[in-house]
Amino acid sequence: MAKANLRSYTPGPREEAVKTVLAQGLSLEEAGRRLAVPKGTLANWVAAAKRG
Image (tube, rainbow, N blue to C red):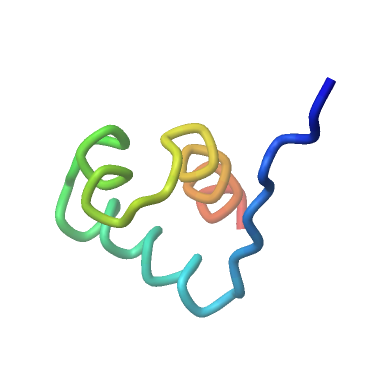
């Protein structure tokens, strides 16, 4: 089985993506599409930000 292409994101773009979701009230699907970030990844970032 081949390895999946895993992408690494730096903290700056992660924070901006979370701000985009929370400030603009976008769905994870829409924000992920706009930012080219998988929905699951974005969901993890948002959940982590809400936890503090």
